[in-house]
Image (cartoon, rainbow, N blue to C red; front, side):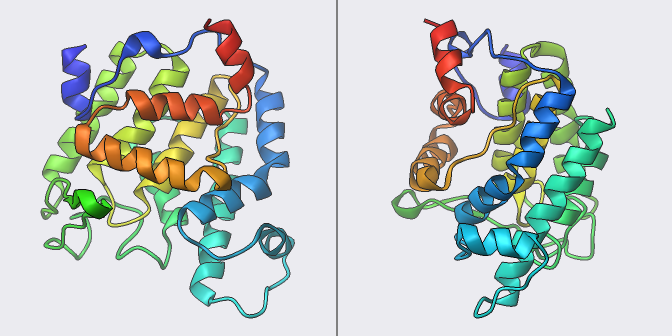
Length: 258
């Protein structure tokens, strides 16, 4: 367990991870994700501070442009939709894998024309000096590993983290949630880390027959406050519980674990 926590860079109370999370067929979970796609995209855009309303996102995803909005905001929504569709296709085809190539492939869709670079780890492209940080409000800033040419440390940390998750975490819900927080903490990319890591989380969940998680737009502030505490304490227990509460089967999960 200490090896797992050391590899990921954070810890959590494993006793509080839910068991008895409802599972369904792959067809059923992918159909649910497809049906909820507009909601997932809108929720994710709200977390990024995107001003698009739900009806505007729906209109845009139907192929109709929305007047009076910035091109960059529109592109962010379309990128989220494209990433969602690609994730769905990978899961449906049984091709989703928790690895670097798929992580960077999804990032290439999520952060296209938005991040400084996209589709590879920090340091694997032309920019090898700039290290981004995460603003934590009154708590200051969180600075991840520095950007270095070739990203040796980021690759080492990613490889070690994946190995530890595969070896020590059997529970699909726990593994999925831990990967999201791992990606959010280590900041493998210049931008789009949380979004891409949530897509990976949902790939793990759906591949195990568990419905995907969306952070509801109404819980954006709650999400941000809990993430600040996660960055400052490196304790993921609260965020894990929050993700359970955001799951479509949250009430059933709660009943199964009381």
